[in-house]
Image (cartoon, rainbow, N blue to C red; front, side, top):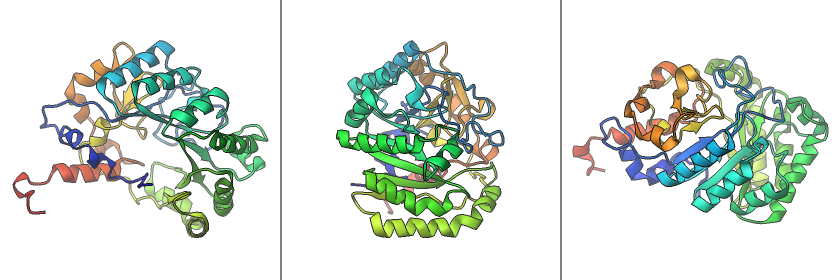
Length: 356
């Protein structure tokens, strides 16, 4: 299997890359759209960035918002007509709490758009699990607790939820199909001593990969570093031990547990990635990315509540260049390294390209 988390995927889409700059005369469709179908969630994680009062992400989110069924089917129809290649369902809330998810992914399957989802895994059963197992490209389940008691404390969920989610994953893998099942472990000061044991448990039930990431506790990089500094070396040791014992082609361990930058400042003044992978929120607003979702002041590209997505995307090209990351994106940003690569690519002197 090739690299799943590489930042170089975009360079396989040269036409899209060449259409991004303001000097281009093209407005090409996004390659990948993230849809947040509902803001309702049956878990209440303490670190959830969409519900934390001290983080900019999610500051304008209404927890009751949900995309109406007819509008969702219209969105899928537009994405297919535009040639969008992939859709990821995420939160906001948990996508598996969305009552029309099965019908939505059935339409995506029929359109040939590839789809995936992020979920807490508590509703990964019955017909929706069967469909994802056979037709989704990947599914990633978020975890934090290491047993029933700790999991319930993290998420304010039923006492036996941890065991239920593990059983859902094990059953999901036994269904067969092609869906790649991953788990994202979110590390904080309570679970940092349990990372190795949790990875071992997940490998034992048959998941395909584990991604280990730090919880984000502040808009400040320095404050995130201060939070993780006391536990960083222990976490790294456990990840390394798990990689040595269990890592390989059949079970991937992705170490995304890194110290944040001292500042989250950006040196560039436009964001290529908002044209590559925008977000449609449950409020029917289109946002630049999932690090700016439900931030109307700084992350809003516009609304599709009264228009179709394909119409919204094709008019008013200036909306793609009104976001200045150096001014408003001084916080965690998953697209930052990709943006830097793309801007460097587009900035290459055309007269010197042959001198590789």
